[in-house]
Length: 439
Image (cartoon, rainbow, N blue to C red; front, top):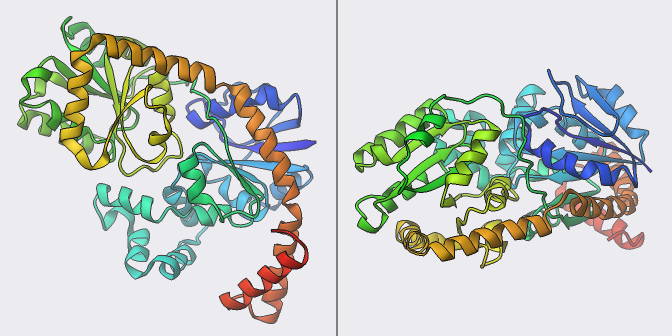
């Protein structure tokens, strides 16, 4: 079976990293090509790589010659030259994020269809949300924008007409159920490799921080882009003015915009934590591993949750570092003996209690760290991921008749001028699916 997998292949794409882990196994069963938007550099790929620039009709025609097209989508501009193809040629969609708001909006601006997208949001969510989408962060705070992205995820825009969807948690599967013509498959996301292609530090201070860290310090880290949904301010409040947590040093490891970095540093200063808090910025792969090797505890307190599974949490678990998470979304699906779960509503009090438990019990920290590493090693391989993708591909092909019926119905409705009458469209579609046993 000839299959084209369309995904970014930038050396710095974490999504490309986990997807390519499945490629060797997939290529044993599929005649596989990887198609990707053009980049200055590409990560190594064990199957033919087909870069393209503009996602135009010639690319659609070439992809249509394959038996199946697999589209890999995440909420970043790296995918803006993939989304238009997924919207026009039905295929299997591998969805890495629970919200695609930034991607869909960015792509709509590039394709000059923002007004159409705004009308879509207005029809489904109301005037206020439509205004927010049009203006984005010019109208609301970064915190409110993240909440908006969770409430208006725009995943339906990407999945309309798709032959099936692959997600990475049961929580995400429930969110996308009914948005695709095919089935929803939950696949075990591989743990990112320790070589993601980050060769440059955002700042040069992280190595010096490690050198200066006191031997008796308990290092607490967060890993990933520093933004408003990571609960870093709550972590600062939790360790402030608490004698039992006096040895805890908090570092946020990941890219940070200057405005966010300055705000967090000011907050730490106000709480008297300037000597125990650092924003490292983006670090190299090797330095990240050094920091995780030194860390005693890590935290992943995302709220709202915009991703379908957290690759950074898998990275932290692989390092043997016990992780504190909120007991919600896909984090709630992690084994209770692997991560330490904090009720979302408990906020600072719950975080502080979890930190007390981890700081006070060296043996429990070690046990949880070891269980987390074993969990990742035993359940998150590229081969296991490939098995799920192969099964999803088979199910996607079985959904092709539904796609043909839907396309034909849509064309007939447009000819009759009935495509804007939602009640008529739904009645005709339901009848067709019943007559042809396509449900």
